[in-house]
Image 1 (cartoon, rainbow, N blue to C red):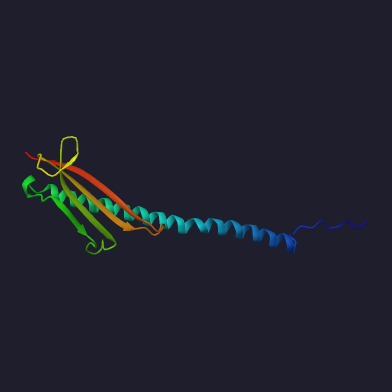
Image 2: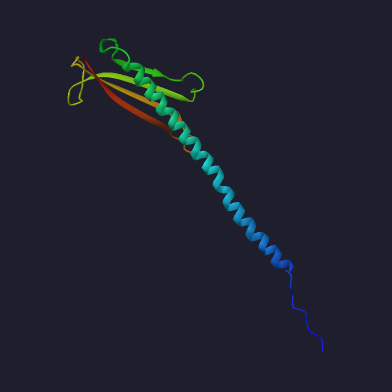
Length: 136
């Protein structure tokens, strides 16, 4: 009496199906990496924008109250390596309830807006910092 051999290997169809399932999984995982890199770039740009806004506020705060000129300063393109950013600084007189006024009330509001073009969206991104300087 002869015993029939049981199949111990994979058929060609099973092997192809396993490879297909594996490749679909690998393709799905690989699609995550570019998104992660783009998000990392967005976060890096936002961190740089925060740094640029804070640096401008610190520069202005280092002056005396009387040395801080009221007005708008537009920096369309900053020096390298920050040439992808623009910065708008507005200094204005405000009252104690933060309402804008044209007369000197002893309180100035500094508004620094740093803008850049995001890779993930067509619209620009921006960071806004505000602070107050009081006459001493």
